[in-house]
Length: 111
Length: 116
Image (cartoon, rainbow over all chains, first blue to last red; front, side):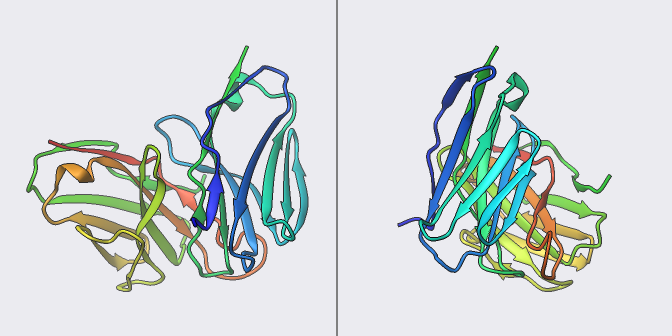
């Protein structure tokens, strides 16, 4: 079983829709949770960062961590064509450990 | 603006050639990483380094080596390139410590290598 599972999509939604992206994981010791966004032919860039459980909101983006279910989510409100990208979840045990990445979900927001 | 710079964006090499991929970061980060990214396989860790002259194998180190002679520079070396090493290579760095920002990776733009 992979430590981090993420549906690769592709996911296609109309502009303005609410998007939900999800990852599940198997290692209950993960403490740091991140979402990266990667545009075509570019490197991933950090979008959201959460330590331990709970929610975090930044503009149109909300990250949720449910450690009891080993499940993390990224919500995008009022999605825009510029949100079209691949979204990668990532997590790690603690400081100093390498990140474990999901394979990424490809999102297309159509005008 | 903080940066991780990968010197070559696109390279085409022949089978058996020695290939150097260079990465430089200007954030004084202790940790540096090399990943490769392939469709359907996601990001896979090749090597990482927590300090100068220090290296650790990642998940797929075979066919690769690394060098970190200075804190800001981390090089990936393909001693004898093969076609199955055609891929997107991503360098990243992070700082050591706890609290907000711990383990956050800053990535370079990537180096797309084609081996013929």
